[in-house]
Image 1 (cartoon, rainbow, N blue to C red):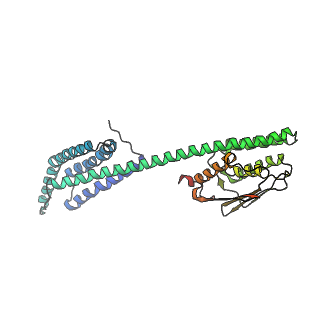
Image 2 (cartoon, rainbow, N blue to C red):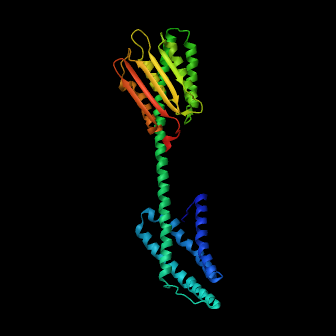
Length: 350
């Protein structure tokens, strides 16, 4: 059994269109003859059959199933049957009704065209329109399904990238706390509390597609506070935030990889750490600058670049053309400059 389902919106459009199409010939007949022949009501009620047999049955269930030969045979058989019934039982009586009305009114009768030709051409036109509409609906349906599948695949990929990033962050944070515990630092309990705040944010709040910029910056400040606890000299660790951060949103956990790497590689052989972070919000454009010295540890792009590579992929997915990312490195310094357009919150869905 063939079953075709339409949305409520589609039903409303179809009903409105057929009302308009159906009323116009009836109104024309009334103006011309002073009344509407009964046979014309039947003819108008039969026309949607032409449309919907092709629209809802033949095209979706036969033509789109690649049964072209069967579709052609059934279409021809249906059109012949429809026109036979229409001409023999409706058009013939309708013509006689109209002639009788004209005779009663003393009006001259005009030619009614070819008895079989004109109805056949008209019925073919309505039938083909049903097929065209069905193909258009199928095209847009498949297009929506394809886009939904692409979005689902990219969301899975994004989640995979975040799952890679989170263990990387946790590993570095535990290393920091371990160094405090090993040195019997009084800051170890505070570090554990700070880490718990960071993990709470990552597990419960950063699940949202977007978070407030204020929460994300609080998360960054907590992370920097955790790193300060393990450092011997933190005078050159700077964080400056300027601009109005209220009512702005950002995708979470995008900046932490840059900051992680700055703390990992930004300590020289004397134990001094140089990290300069500047965040500015100008006309809803987010500017992020970070600079660190290249210190004791040589950057291992193969093993330690997991977070950075993942974050680049996330930026390309989430912000597409609404961001710029510049990374520079010389013998002494490593610099990152990032800009984000925070006006367009859902660019990755467009």
